[in-house]
Each structure stands twice: as structure tokens, then as C-alpha cells.
Image 1: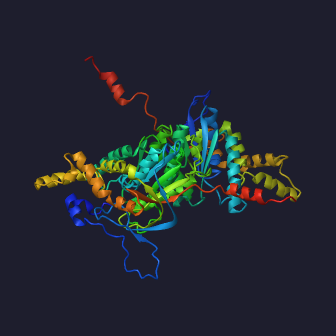
Image 2: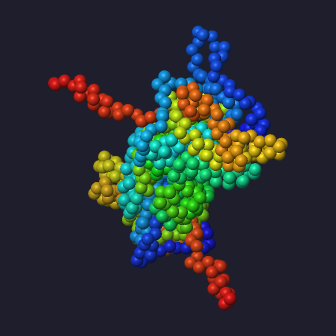
Length: 289
Length: 345
């Protein structure tokens, strides 16, 4: 843990109105678990949120590979709606095989979207995070990081400018705390947004455990038992299960800071200062000619 | 185009082989029917027509058309290097634009391998690509700047994606580029570009490839016509269209003269004129200025093989292509059959 942890709490009003963030994940359940609270919080504070999924999630689900692609696609839209995303994009690279794709091609697609959507802030994998064993994660993280600054350069993909797009650098980044031991310097208070996070997770049924509550309820019913915690419907069961059993990390991350639920991030702020060092120097030392 | 060792001295090149070769039958016994035909060649330059063509039985001679029959249509001439389009299909590009097409020139490499230094080569060829577009009548020139001679190390899918973007943005109907099936192609840039250009043609028309383009306001486009040209000196592609470029040979010449950083044209005439002057000689053909010398050099020496090709078909000058045209309306054909043959129940 870094010594200079910043606790990002809820802000009143709409301080981020006019700004756009893109949450870029590889799989259906990445954003909901690692940053569902942050996404809901930023949208509540005025950001427009866009969601980009890079893989096709073919390996996860209870169907065939083809059926998994469809079920994850459908759940991705539902999950995005639960968190309040305005737009959702899917790239459909093959799941678990993304270290075999062209890094320049995926980067080019992200640059197009960053320029098109005028993205100010990204939320994604830490491309330098240790312990990352899923190639889809680090490939996505690398491409996002590179696209952030290249999207501000007019000489990268100049044909985009012909289509009316403008160079647009992405200046703020929130990198997931996806694996134990990865660095973080920001703890985001997710307490006020935990219901939306739960709403998002329960849509992740092909992967992510969103339907474990209803499954447990059905299993207990077959045994002629029930858990009062799970309520009277599949919906209440799924939500209760997530809240009770799947949010331990969020509780643990909040506890040292007196928060009920929190998410961890490595935050980078590359916004230029309102007044440059040169301007400040001129203001201080310039004399009449 | 591959420069190889041609450009040492214009005079040396002219002295090398100033006579037409190829064309006459060899020692093939009469029981065999040739499957490829050698082209008559002047021997003035390797970068003109290939050594062999195979002709399709439904070959079409595309002649100049009056008016503006292609008004509203868009073509993209796609070249790995700044001299490919001018040398191999510049006459046809100029013809189609004169007949109403809006034309765009897309160069894919940075041409760094041709120049005094690598940096000088990149700069000069960038200038040339824009200069070449003008005499051909192209509205705009694009460059992708992939490293010259190293494109087999680039991600073909990324080049294809950029071409799909441009096809959709410009609403391209027709492309002219190297034939992806040219035999004996020794330049990797040619292979990569032609494959990417071909695959991008049909993918640009789908709604599942790069759907984010539509969010940016771009529209699907089916690239329905393709003119594939050969490479030289050794080539061999299938030819089903001969284009009469007689009326556009001067456009083609000017495009090649504009190409000073690469290829056999550019300032070669002026250099020859100066070289001869040092020897106390002159070629009347080259006229009295560098401009006349450059133009005459290209027209007389570098276009000669295109004249010889045209002669085979009763034309002044010609370029040869594997042409792929719009697909038939299959469903209309089916409907027509059904309408003609359907009987009452």
C-alpha cells in the first residue's frame, strides 16, 4: 500500500458535468467487480460513462462456446444499463487469446473511440500490475495506456482527422486493483453506490456469480429448506447473495478508512496545470520593455 | 517498385539494352498450347510491364468514354510506394478521373529505402506522393508511413482496418492496386498492401467489422470494382482488361516526372542532358531545358513498353489489368427465373 493514499469521497452536485470516462475491461465481470462503485459514483457526479469490452468471453458460461458469446454479449448490455453507462462497445477478440492479436490494431480502435467520445478519463487494468495471469487483462491494459496519449497526437492515424475527429489526449486514469499486491494510491468510497454495484453484478450470470443466489435458493428448495436471507424471489436471492458473500474485498478495502465499502485504484493525473510554470515565471519576473 | 540497381546512370541504362525483346514464339513444340505470353519489351527499364501475361478469353478493351459516365463515383489508387501507381496504372487513374471519378491516392509505406539518407528519402517521397496526385487528377493523397521493405513485419490486420476506415469515409467504389496474386513478387510491401486492400474491399461493406466506425458517422460501402495490375520486371498476372491510355499518356508521364525521390523517372532526363553536355553531346529528343528533358525521357524511354503493349491490341498506349467488376444481382436473377417458371398450385 502506498503511504499517500487518497480517499475519494462522494462529491455533491455535478462537479464532473461535461466530462466523459471510458471503462475498458476485457470480460463481462471485470468492471462490475473492480470498479462498479467508482463508475456509478462518477456518473452520479456528472460524468458521461462509456463501457468498452475487448474480449468475446467465449470461455465463460454454461453453454457452448458460441452460446457463451451470445449470453455474455446480452448480459454486458444489461450490466451496462444497471450502472448507467450511456454507450457500450464490444470488440469481441477471442477470450484468453488476446496476447496473440495485433497490439497496434486494438490500440488503433481505442484511439478512434477516445477521440470520437472525447474521453477525459479511463478506468481499466494496470498494465504494469504484478500477479496478472490473464493475458486478456494485460493486453487490454497496455493498449489503453498507449492509446491515452497517442489519441492526442495528430500524426497518429491522421485519417481520423479527415472524418472530423480531433486529437484528444486522455489525462486521468484509474487502474484497477485486480490482483493482490498490485499498487494503489486511491480508495474510492463506494458505500452510496453499492446497490448499483450489486445491480450490475447480478446481471453477470455467465460469469461473475450473478445468479448464485437463485441457484442456491432452488437447491435449498429441493431439500425442502430455505434461507430467509435470500428473500422470496430469484431476484432478491441473487442480490442478497452478492451482498452477503461476494463483496468481502470491498468491505476489507473500506475498513481501514472507516468506509462500509470501497474500491482500490492506482490513479494517475496527467492534466496540465491551469497555469504553466513558464507563465508563472513570466508573471513574476516580466518587466516592461 | 523495387529500385534494385537500375539508377546508376541514365546513359548507362540506355546503353544496356536499346532493343525490343520478347513476343516471338520460342521453342515450344506445337503440341503444346501456351498458357502465358511473353511481352515485347524495349529493354529501357525494368519497371514497366511484366515479362508474361496470361489472357482471359473474355478480355475487354476499355476505351475512352465520352462525357462523365463515372460522375459521383469514387476511386482509390493504393500503392505501397510513391512510384507504383504512376508507373503501373497512372494512365488508367487519369482516364477514370477524367471520366467523372473522384480520385484519392493512398501510399502505405514511408519510402525510406529510396533517398540519399533514410531521412531525406522519407521527406522527398512524402512530397512526391502529393506531387504525383496532381497530374493524375486526384483530389487528395494519403500516406500511412509504414517502414519501407519491412511491411511483412507489420500487422496486416491493422493496415486492413485503416483501409476499411478510408473506404467507408471516402465511400470508395473502385480500387486500383497491385494484384495480390502476382506471381514471382519479390517485394513484401507489395504483397502485404495488395492483400490488405483486397480484404478491406468486402469487409468495408459489412456491419460487423469495426462497428465503432458507424458511431463516428461513417457508412458501409461495398467496393465493387477492382483493377489489379502486375509488377515488373518479372510478374505474370491474369489479364482480362486492356485499358487504352493513349489520350492520357502525357498525364502518366507528368506523374512520373513528379516522382523525383524514387523510381526511374523524376529528373532522369535532366541528369542525362547534363551528362551528355559534359561530353560535348546532346540528344535532340531531350529539348532545350530540364523540363523538356525530363518529360521526353519518361515518354520516350519509360513509356515505350506501354506503347509496345498497346500495339498488341491496336492501341497507342495501354495498361493491363485483372479487372473484377460488380457482382451480378443474384436475387434478381432468381426472382426472374421464379417469375418465368412458377406455376399455379
